[in-house]
Length: 235
Image (cartoon, rainbow, N blue to C red; front, side, top):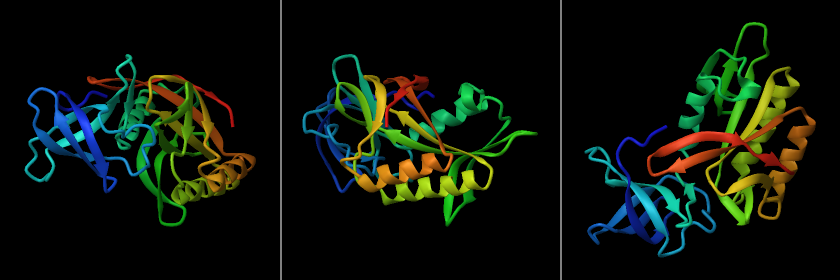
């Protein structure tokens, strides 16, 4: 999935009110405010002075003319901070049957209502197969070299999604929790149980109920984001 417009480099001044980030454009030195499409804590990614990549836009309906897309670790690695990107990248991968454990499914339907006032990220179907309910979580936290973790803050909503997936599994459907690691510097994945013990408990219960877990990495650059190989899961 390529970005719609060319990204521009900047330095982060501060991230605040969750969805706002003040930055200084590298090319012009102009100070601007960018939209930050990430409700999480962004632990380790929002330090002042961090090199970032922004996507400009000329949409008159948008108040902010830049969107924060990437953190540049300046060692050849990137982290994607826009939590809307994983679903866009995964939709293409699912439709092209690029995810082996789900490649038998012909129909991909995003944002289908289910559970208690929830929407599943993707509902997959094919003749002769049980429906597959796929919930997607964007992973950006890494506190140890090579190890990606989720979540980066307490997420009661995430625990609710696991419980609803467990209900789908109990009803005879396939239920899949898919973690997409938006970092290029990780090869393993685990739960950050110390950050949110309740989420870790909900995950264990969901696994016992038959919920499957998948984890994939991403190839990230200022040009775009693509699905990469599966990561090892240790939970």
